[in-house]
Length: 449
Ligand code: HEC
Ligand code: HEC
Ligand code: HEC
Image (cartoon, rainbow, N blue to C red; front, side, top):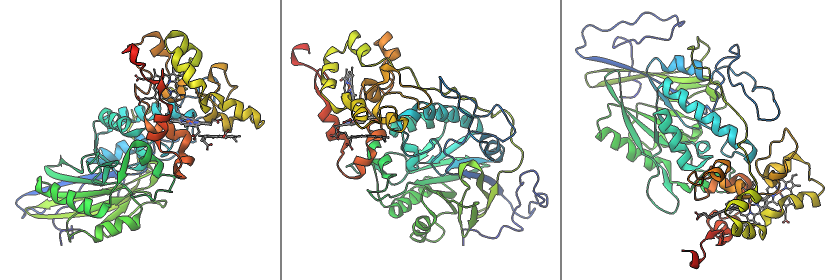
């Protein structure tokens, strides 16, 4: 059996400092001995706080009103960095954002945290990550930008562009570690349409196909591309991951990691689940001698030393909102008139009518760029231009600079507020976006072409 062949006598690998294991012993009789360590995190969800005792971690607050720093959590970057320094660092998905859906008042902070995380992960050396539904909270393009900034590859064998059969990400990657070519296959969860998390796919323009056949195909392709060892990153709960593995030919993958484990992390029967929030990783020790591959897995709680230098400071705070009138004054008078005819221009009036005009829980969606920690500013009233196009202060000063979300409004922007309707099947983002287009707003008047 390829998978989990006994390790003893073949090779023993260096263990993290602090583990009372015998020193590495290499069998002198083996002609070619190669070994690699693979470290896999999962469900990290933008966990930056390195260690409870490092006070420079995750400092910052929403502009205007200080709020307490996030409670310290064991795990995080410094500890992951220490573990990852051992070998190849992979992630099983849900790496970047706290949730599959980020409400408007949290968007700026979530982006800033993800970007800080990406810069730090580049130094940590993240090689490959699976795509979790939570990674799509800001759409496909933002996820790709973050991965690029981290220098990491994204893998998902079963996510396709909605309504097509074209894969959105690479199904697998082959990376070298310790002289071994390690194939890394990714898969994303298949979610029922009424699951809240399905919003992430819906608004990112993606669909998940059955994971089993997709993973089988990707594993075969990775082997054909020269992978000597194959690790499957199955971003799904354990029972679904088990089902995928049962459908594969014996020995097709050498080890697999699932996500969404609530417990303390474990590894058994070739499948492991890391502890969420970066508190624990799955560590795979891979030994190869001639044609034989042996993988030993273990769940490792990251309680050891933290590598210094991975403290991350995030400047938080919502970007400036200039307001609909300012956009109209400068250029977009016709768009203002078009907007005034929509429900978005009456969103605050709706709240006032319900005697909820000062309720922060409502204003996060019925206003623009509002921070619950302070009073509403007049320019933030209503769901105005920048709720959909993003902060436009820089764009107003220089029209060569696009608004924050670019020329076309991404679906996830609508999804941040319209998720409930979408799940009920009454909000189809393409249709609703078309409804907002009119001469002067998204449709150019023929005379002006
Ligand atoms: C910041 C939150 C927010 C964002 C972002 C947002 N909306 Fe809305 N939308 C609302 C609110 C609130 C209402 C209801 C306003 C009222 O009637 O008081 C609404 C109402 C609507 C309506 C009319 C009611 C209906 O369901 O037919 C349409 C259409 C609509 N939105 C489409 C969109 C589209 C398309 C996008 C993305 C381009 C979008 N919205 C982005 C908050 C938002
Ligand atoms: C997650 C974003 C979100 C939050 C939070 C939110 N709303 Fe809304 N609200 C919407 C959207 C989107 C619509 C339009 C679609 C619909 O009618 O479902 C809407 C529609 C409404 C409408 C119906 C408007 C009409 O004339 O048809 C009322 C009333 C309303 N909201 C009140 C509230 C109140 C009160 C709160 C706070 C307790 C609140 N909303 C919080 C997004 C939100
Ligand atoms: C509820 C979301 C929403 C709001 C609010 C909104 N827009 Fe738009 N806007 C859109 C959508 C959707 C499009 C169509 C984008 C596309 O081409 O796919 C669009 C298109 C545009 C375009 C054309 C972009 C291009 O290059 O073709 C301009 C300009 C624009 N909006 C300006 C404004 C201004 C100014 C306001 C405020 C007065 C405003 N919008 C309010 C959603 C919104």
